[in-house]
Image 1 (cartoon, rainbow, N blue to C red):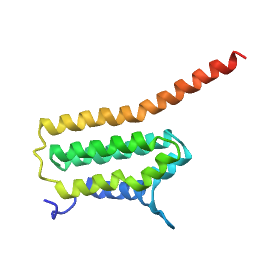
Image 2: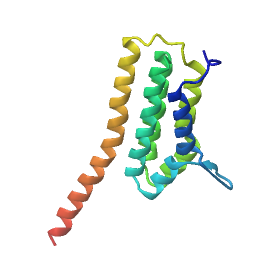
Image 3: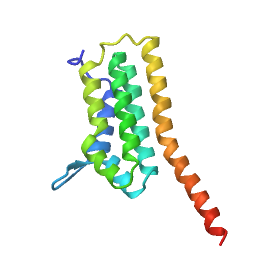
Length: 157
């Protein structure tokens, strides 16, 4: 079905991916998007925000009836991006190189209309959403917990 006319949601996620992965062209690095930039400027929180864009791409893939195996690969790409992208500086360079949203868009476009759109696909997306949300929230929780612990430790002096 990849030759079929793109849906409105597919057109929207194409624009989203452009913003997330390669909106600005820089010497040496090539295309850089909000995924790398926001993570660098706002560690953890920037990655959490751009991770939500990745989830929108996954939901669109489900609507476009991408097969279950491809959805699993997309979930893997998102989790790797959010977890490794949360590492300050190194993770931001990883985001620029990995470009999970571009990878997932290519998977979506290559396999749309091939899946059943059945319960298994819905469960994979549901589990993927839980993993992606956990990958976003756990670093934030660690940051808050570390800050609170550090504050308690410093306040003892």
